[in-house]
Image (cartoon, rainbow, N blue to C red; front, side, top):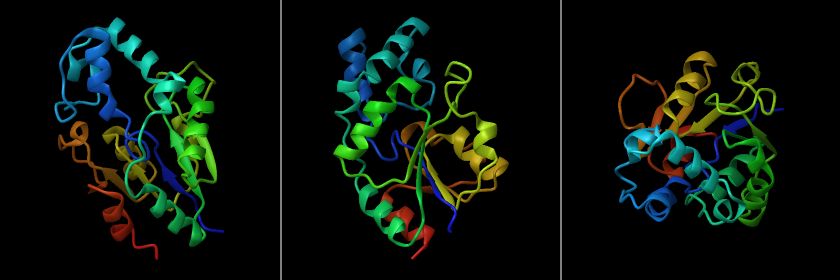
Length: 196
């Protein structure tokens, strides 16, 4: 059996962060743009206090907001193609554990193919024991990975030695020496992965 393909969810399958500027303006009256999100640290990108950031994450993970995200173009077709070649699709998200049910509902509603769904504490934000740890992920083999986080892409490429594609987004454009291959679309990822 082929090793699974590691797929992140936010900004890889779902256009999550494109909704943030509108939410930040609605909740705090702060004007922002998607292209202006130059850091994965949203308090830095939007000038939020810790209290505001906590509130934003609470709002973003409400079921009605989660269900409103649009799929990233080409994701469905690429994952279906890889599945047809015998590669299991393993969705590994850093969303909070309480977002599991609406996340699964979103995947089903948008007909995103997958074989497994797991929540991992990628950034040290989850209550201990409520999700997979990075060390648990590191013990696994993946054919390849697709991520939008520089720190996770570095972890996958360097710690796990997994071929990784970094989905190009404004917050991951600062060069930190990450060895992941940058791609701007699912079409490009599918071509570069060359799993045919």
